[in-house]
Image 1 (cartoon, helix red, strand yellow):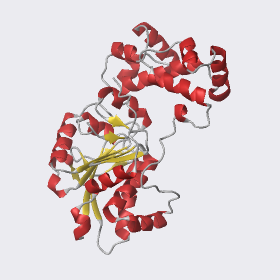
Image 2 (cartoon, one colour):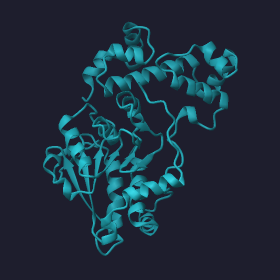
Image 3 (tube, rainbow, N blue to C red):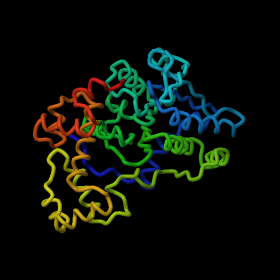
Image 4 (cartoon, rainbow, N blue to C red):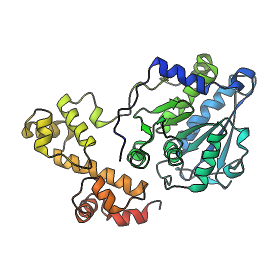
Length: 346
């Protein structure tokens, strides 16, 4: 079941400990740090180019290359991006000499297939054994987690993939920050955070001066060394009244065994009517409708991202029977759960 422990916060001690892991001997000896990008079908072109833009720009600031990178697919065949553009890669991951790389990033996207891929997992494990720093773009960290390579690490992932990762990889500490650097693991949650993530990596390799030069060239508006706030989330919206935030948090924490409206109201010391007014004013919905949408949306993610049975998903999302779940799902998404599973990846 999902890991509900509170994500660790980032402090100065944590940042310093990361530097010891990302500092690389090549940065001190003048040799280029070598990065491989594993492209998966429907990978986010914007996330990929954001990361690559940072390292290419870093090279422009130096008389000798600071980085070298190559693109890879599992078998060396061209990969189609989320924009429908087919990208030729430099080599196949399965034949790549891993001793010729220092870092390896898995590039995913909204429609990337997240079903377990044994050949990919085996190769990623080999990369970890070679001591490579491993990273994920968008939902690339999900694919690393499937291989057991995020166990005991903190990472982030695109919001669409959070529920599936929590359900299938409970040993992973899932953060709500846009990017995370935890020892020899690096991850970002989407396209916009890919550039920030790579700039943080470059800062730890080569220092603030190089990053400032990149920022000037790319005209970045705001780049932070470490993400300071979580990605937007309704339950954490500081503009909402605290009692409403508390109700939303209780709903999110109690998906499998939903709380009744009277119980929710009692836990935040309000009447049911007061809770309903808060929802009407700030959420433009009723508490029961919002709670159902929260559960049915989570069910959809589990349905599309995992191989759990429909019966198991029914229980995990608090529905009394598969018939009730199927009826609610069809009303909300226009198709049955079994049809949705048959059509995934199409």
